[in-house]
Amino acid sequence: MEKEQHFEEEMQNADLFLLLFYNSSYVGQNLYSVALADSVLKLLNKRDFYKGSWADSDSSSIRSISSVIFEDGC
Image 1 (cartoon, rainbow, N blue to C red):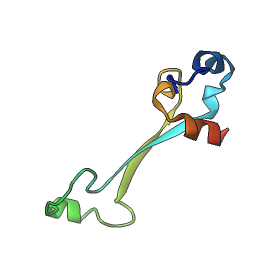
Image 2 (cartoon, rainbow, N blue to C red):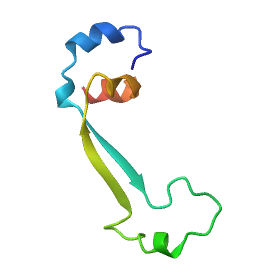
Image 3 (spheres, helix red, strand yellow):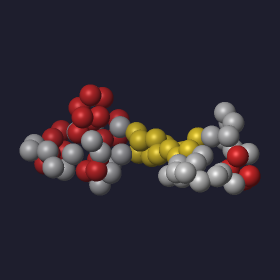
């Protein structure tokens, strides 16, 4: 967002409290061409596969998101 032409102007109009982020990770993320350890294999189920947390948006977090996602969601 911070590279957008009208970023500073739109920051004045943005209702940032309406925007939430889900920061997620999943089992085996960033592992390529390696055998998974037994501890990782145990997490390959519906309940444990994804982990994450919700976070409120603020003026610092909004800078690094994709403007396409921001504009599409409004």
